[in-house]
Length: 207
Image 1 (cartoon, rainbow, N blue to C red):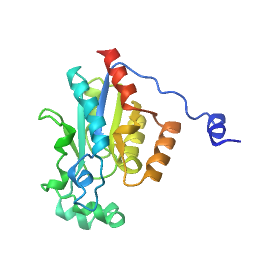
Image 2: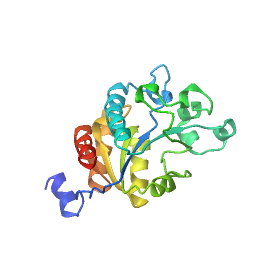
Image 3: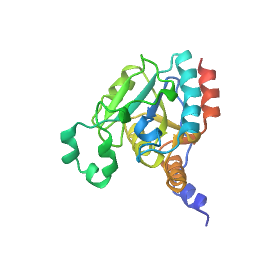
């Protein structure tokens, strides 16, 4: 029996309904992840460019665009368990260039930036309230890394009651194998994994 058949027989992989009030959440395209002078980063230029085409279109049609970054205070570096496992993340200090959103994303002054302290953009933040207050029913998740903060955000988004779409060419990771594995798993269980062209056409249809 094929892998696809196993998942299908178990009832996974059904299509996600698309609402009429989307928002784009761009996860952690900060310099600490995108500027390869830093050891925590990888080349994400293509994924940022694809994401920017969507966010530019979104703003033009009134769709909210929200960015996230991970930023720690010095005292957190000694106390948070995640930073004992992922020690490289301790370099993401509040006030440093590493936590600034990469200007190549096309971020605008009016775009909210959610500061988080873990993988999910929802955990310990007001993101769910921000989306609910804006009447959002469908969340488009892009950013980095696919296997870490994107995945965690996708899982929490669907658990918070939102339909979730993930454009694969707008998500980046440090290695291809975890990128592909997590896209596959998200597509089976939590979101529709599609691409930027499909999302752009859908945004146009709503305009």
